[in-house]
Image (cartoon, rainbow, N blue to C red; front, side, top):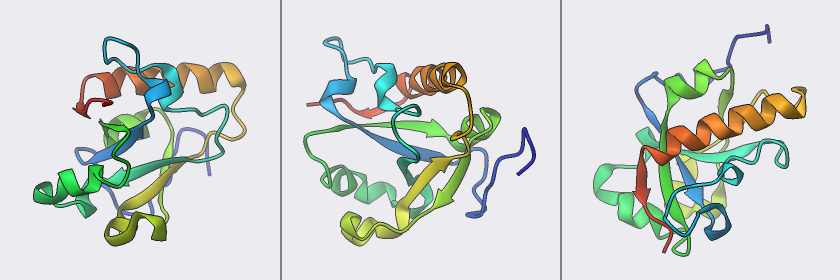
Amino acid sequence: MAAGVSANPGGLLRDEGLYRFVHPNNAKADGTLNSGVFSLRRDPAVSVGMEREIPPDRLAEFCGLKPEQGLARVAVGDVFDLELSVIPDREPAWTEFANAHAELTGYSLWPNKRKEDVAKRLRDLANKQIIKPVP
């Protein structure tokens, strides 16, 4: 893949959303998220849920997959602007939402500083759209 080009095999649109489960370790006492919510340095691929595969009237049920975690949203266009790719990756553990699972990729060869900077930017974007605070 050429530099500056994000893979989009799912045909996602820029204004669509991606949901990220938020582990309690990645939320501060005031409810804001820390950079660990998108752990690009640690994880070879970051799991997200594709909003298009989760009907709005079933969002609470989707959150129930990980009831001890919060949920945040980022726009697909913002992810692409950061030169990340979104790869659909069916996850049977997500039961009836298995087809909603995708992974952020395209950063494995980046230097750690860039991974950290992008993780912070994703955190800032997610902090603007916290769907379910960490319990």
